[in-house]
Image 1 (cartoon, rainbow, N blue to C red):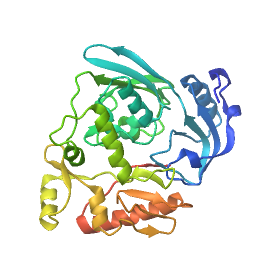
Image 2: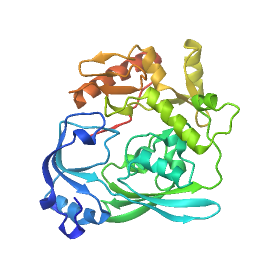
Image 3: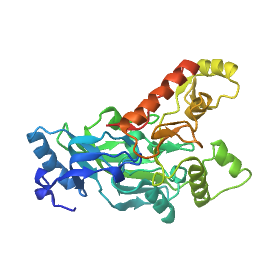
Length: 344
């Protein structure tokens, strides 16, 4: 569907649209009414119509970081805005504007093919470009916040398009201004700034071990990250999952030291001054959940951080298992795990 803005109203919505292919957890869900947004110009008139009818609404991209109910009420906007444009490139940096509906991994691969390295550590993260700032996606020592120049979005409170700078996005660990203000912004484009001065980011143990005493190229790091992620995470097309289901909890140095005295093998990483980041997967594994199955859902046998849907699992099944894990980790370690995906 590629409708001009003047005709994009509720009359163009598709009723009872199945969303099985729009969520990587593989939950059987459908939208009461849905419409594909392929151009940002469609949004203002459509939202005006939605508000005039007093209908609930929500935005859905690639569905890689969501837990969907059996029915999404009201109107679901499916963001498929495409396009990649190099705005400028000089001796110091390259600016690239990307449509919110572009697939994230394909975009990272494209940057390397164009000779713009930097984001190779973020390879194979599922989802769309538009979703990346919301969660401030990150992996292997990098966060997307390091590269975002600004985010273009429709502000439903101001009823107009806005551009938020990196600072205004208020990025934090798996957090952002967008996540703190759900349903206020509909992200349409993201502008990335990639510095020309490149150096490999090998702070994570697996990459450091693989490239010890080597000077890898960006493509070699990209391929290594893809291989490591593939060995740990199931393919959503084969086994439904939303990637890491819990955030790595951040605790004080004092609490980490206390835990390390009780559990010498505990896995942690440096964070801000006076803080340590604990490996949530290790905590879950120690509580006996790795590989555990409860009905149609379970914990992946190769990575305890990943909850999987073996088929037919609902949001209630997934969240019920998550609650069991949270309670046991809290009881055992005194640490509260936060769910990473958005729960609709």
